[in-house]
Image 1 (tube, one colour):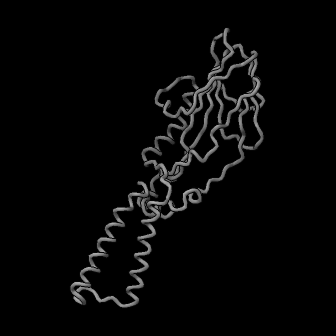
Image 2 (cartoon, helix red, strand yellow; image 1 turned 45 degrees about the vertical axis):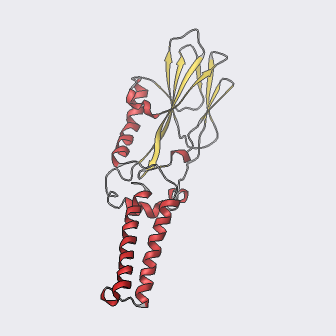
Length: 235
């Protein structure tokens, strides 16, 4: 559910409140005679409804994933990795292909080095092909969406980890990133409590997904100098 799903609730409350006020004016004390304290309570309730109404329109719309979608991504994260590592392509995972590019080498050698940082946040898988007349490496970047509790924050994660300079592929190593989701989208905390209250105990509700994989297709005669120590090769 999105934040806009709260609008029918707001309209319903507002309609009921309006009917009560009108009937009170027309029929007098037969319907409701409000004291000062009661008007104060009504005022606070109205203020709360107005606040939710404003949040629904001012909070940045966030892509939301259903429980079924979260379960599928959680399973696909492992499935995509195993598929690429085994060399058995599965078209079902091509939906996670984010970028496709080529690396043109000027020699028969490529260095793969890590950049500054402590924690690798991307995986690199290499497969070789017989192509003695080419020094071109075909690269694909796959991204499993980064999400937590159904809220997508892929665009806030560092995804472009790879740069190529002078026959050297630099794999960015990024320090642990801490995402404070409700600081990015302040209004979502209240709206999520309203919308997601019934599903928070689901087994897949709090699952985190998110992974970036670089898949390299390299001519077999090219010498790969791995200075990073975390390159995986197709079995």
